[in-house]
Length: 183
Image 1 (tube, rainbow, N blue to C red):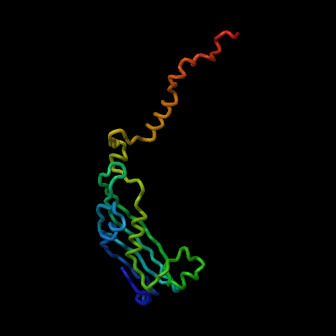
Image 2: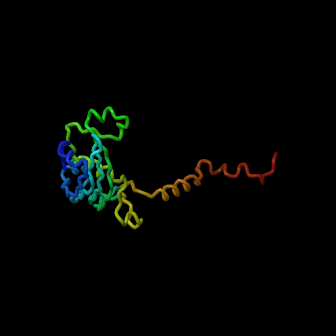
Image 3: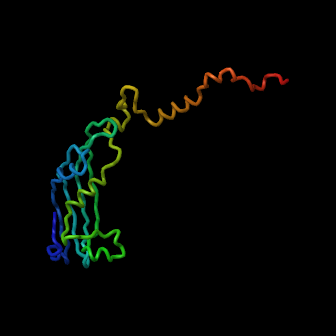
């Protein structure tokens, strides 16, 4: 999905309606090696011109397959999100007082494939779990000398550790009891 600014000029009066299916699997997997699979990306929305600015309002639907962050089992992650961005020619974007929110168009053309890719990668959560891991039914991974435990289990172990008396100090346990006669 790439348009030059001259092509978009004919949509100044009425916005350009978009409904495209993109195959971004290879480029997304190149940018994020954790992606096991990517479905075709459905992009719908509008592109409108306002002065020298190009305003995009898109809705993106895609299904990603990623490894679980706990067990590395494949997890299907459906994404459905909206993206709104403002583009302007590079010279105008640099001089605009809201330049943080305006994306410069370096070569005079609008390439939404890159913007869609960027936003898909931004939508991937840091913690991805299978349904059984989310419900707490799955066993935590463990190996020789290590195991993954929940935060609650960790806290319980810390409390139990604090209650244990160091055996070197066991004889001093009753030293300051108030029941003993004073000399």
